[in-house]
Image (cartoon, rainbow, N blue to C red; front, side):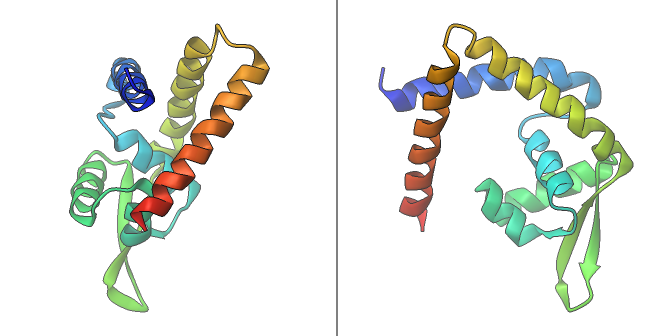
Amino acid sequence: MSFLGEIGVTSRIYALFRSEKLEKLDIVGSQYLYILRVCEYPGISQERLAKILLFNRSSVTRQIAALEKKGFLRRERYEADKRTFLIYPTEKALAAEPKIRKVSRAFRKSITGGLTPEETEQLEDLLKKVNRQGRETLE
C-alpha cells in the first residue's frame, strides 16, 4: 500500500476511535475539528474557518448550524460586514475542548507506542512537510 493509503487507513482508524470516545458528548464526524478551531480562534469568520479546515463553505455552514443547534457554537453577524458571521465557542464547547484533546493524545500515544521519541518526532516532521506541500498544491 502507498503511504497515502497508509495515511488514509490511519485516518479511518482515528475516526472510529474518536467516534467511540466522543459519542457521549454528541460530537460526530469532523465536528471535533470545528470545536477545537473555534475555541482556538474565538470570533473566527466562517470563511477563515473553511480555509483552515480545508472544507468548502457550504459544508462549514451546515456543520456550524448543527453545532449551534447542539449548543457548542454561536454565530454573530460581523458589524463591519453584515454578510459575514463570526463564530464563537459556548461554555459547552469550552468544556468539551479538553476532552477532545485528551482523546487525540490517547490515540497519538497508542499509535506511536512502538516508536522511539525520535521516530515520533521524525514522523511528525515528515507529515508536516507533506501537508505543507499539499496545501501549496491547492493554492
